[in-house]
Length: 138
Image (cartoon, rainbow, N blue to C red; front, top):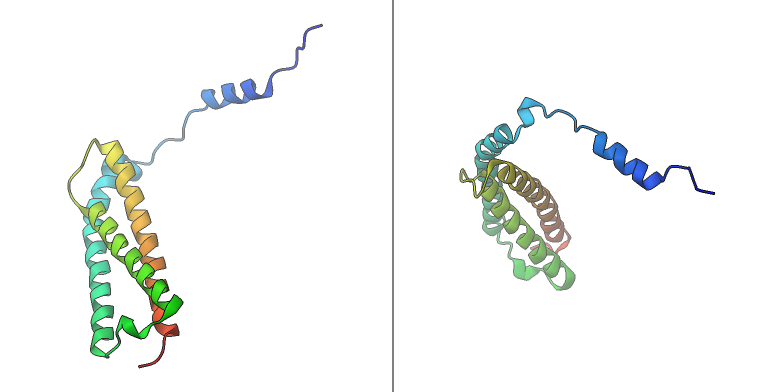
């Protein structure tokens, strides 16, 4: 006797293959998205670099130095500072008006680096300020 029940995996694979992807909204087309990221990326880069410069200058003017931190707070501060530096670089690269390859690949790369850069900037900035706030008062 042969088994006449359909194989679930092959049935599922066929149904996935038959599905058409949803249409892409014109504002999210690769060309529009890359142009938008390159335009706004410059602004985000200036804002990120400027905010880092503002915070560092205020801390330096107040007499605060990273040497005040000890142990785990120093490690947290320097790790977070590294994340912020990487994030500013990623945001700057995203806003660079040069396409390294074709538009669809640039769309994917610039979107990912802008998102990752923004996330690292927020997390790194919050962690660095946490280490500063938990450290000793001057």
